[in-house]
Image 1 (tube, rainbow, N blue to C red):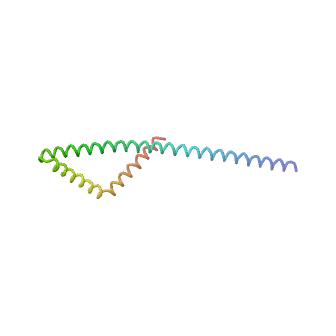
Image 2: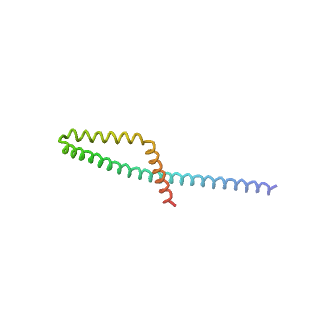
Image 3: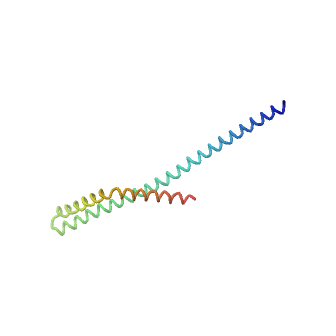
Length: 125
């Protein structure tokens, strides 16, 4: 009879130890998942910030180029209004073209982001 009670106590102790180990494992796995997510988010926001800064510089260059070319055309046409009118027409045409090819542009940008994410993940290994 005593053997049976000792065996039950040993099994209960084993059960408690397995339960504690499993709980610790799950806690560690959850912490790892959380840290891994933070790391990937930090990298993604780093790339996003870089592309935003790059976009701001590109837009600045574009706007300054439009102004410079508008002034140049104004000088050539003899009227600054005509030069900036031509540049406004060029910008409107670019806007219309962008709207027409918007779907394929969004798809290519999404593919670019996926490639960047895969590149970041492959650098982790």
